[in-house]
Length: 295
Image (tube, rainbow, N blue to C red; front, top):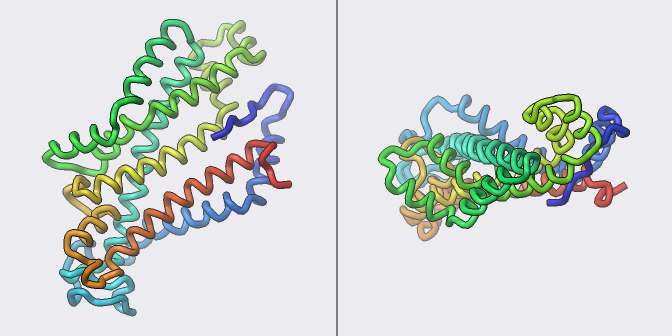
């Protein structure tokens, strides 16, 4: 991830936004990734509303191939794979938003504070960041999920967020170091503006593009970690997710039985959503970094 140029007092913010929008609409990677994400998000929001039964209800013949009645076929037990897919997409986006959002908030709080305050505060926060950074996050998640009696999407997202923030904090800290000595920050400090207000009103807006790109990466990472936990059977104990669909398909030998419609949709869904998010991030990098823009 590259550093985005800071907006100074000599550069009007509306002009910068118009310029960024102009290049954003011309960037094929950003537009393509956004279209894919929006399509899957629409399916996650609207899809469950079009189905009159739950994702785990037994509604049809077992092992039925895709047809006009059952678009994605049915499972070995007669459950509608399409219903599970759209409900699973909803869980995927929810854990991504919650887990990635929590990690972004913690990373911003630690990074901004350490980068702006410096000194002993920076050393303490940097030590905590390094400790969490070297912890085997996946092992911690495995142990935590294995010993939870009732697992939910919220609890899963909480653990993902609490273990995913260190790299974001370090990146934001480095950016804050480069901005805290700028003239507009010095002027705000001399005017008696308090530290939280300086961070929120002066530093954070000049890093808005960088922060947004960081959230996208955290979002995709949360989706992948959640899918990994679900696939090995440590996902939510209630409901359905794309990772749990893959787990059930593997458990009941869908590949050996030729039931490709059971495991292809969730696998393709995870790949498409995460891939689109990373393509969007590359496109945003090109939009906000003049050196990478395609004129």
